Image (cartoon, rainbow, N blue to C red):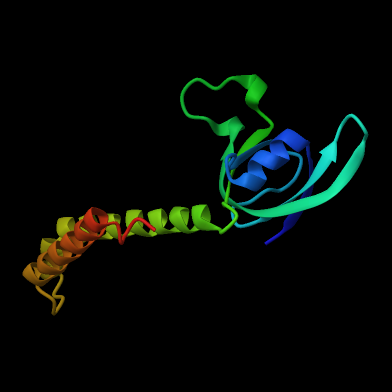
Length: 152
């Protein structure tokens, strides 16, 4: 994990500080990575001075503008959009939970598709056991989404 120290103009700094702005667009002049921290220092371009106020946010998501799907506009190459955690870190937690949920759904799908194959390969667990586990896991995830317990 690296800490990137950056100047941030007052109007953008205050928006990030309040939680209203949860992203940062920057030139890719550093090796930004998800999980790194941004230390934003409020800087006034009119006076060319720092205010002394600073905040730190985690990079929860990184979109390299050079690798946009579909039509790629060359003038975006060399820039990144970074999704930032909120002051209490909740964006990073939601992103990580979404990754875990996605991986879990993928595992369930694989188990459902491969249950017969695993049975033929001589596994002690039967295809019906795998289907039952996948069904229970699917129901638990759906219940979590319905009552909100899997969303945070």
